[in-house]
Image 1: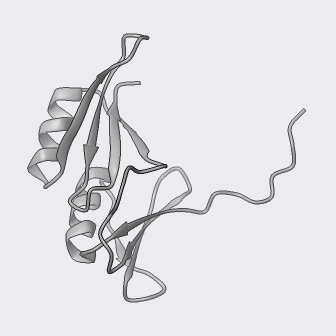
Image 2 (image 1 turned 30 degrees about the vertical axis):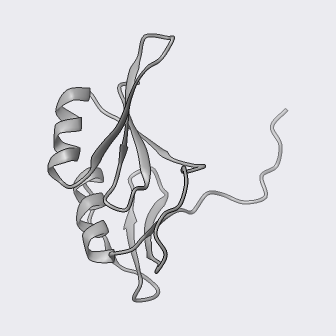
Image 3 (image 1 turned 180 degrees about the vertical axis):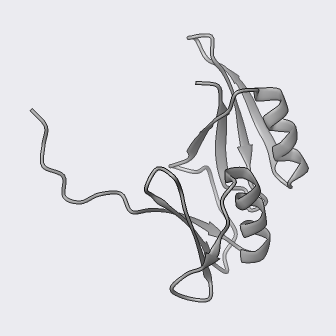
Length: 119
């Protein structure tokens, strides 16, 4: 039996230290433009899945491992990783899953981690 949700997911918010750099990076990664949001230190993009991706400029640097991350599905892992590196991201780790589907852990310029996966 399905449970009644408390609400619906409206946005995923990523803390960044440079809003312009982050907007350029995530726009290139997701293929979506980030426009002004409800305050000057926020930028918002409407994703085709009905959820907003919001960048929030904060003064503090990332500390520690992400407890939540995005999985970005791609068709060509190697080519997608090259594109991530070209737009300012970095490779964190290559992972060979037991199910045979490799994935790549990457980070944006602020160190926020996300995975590239083929499925």
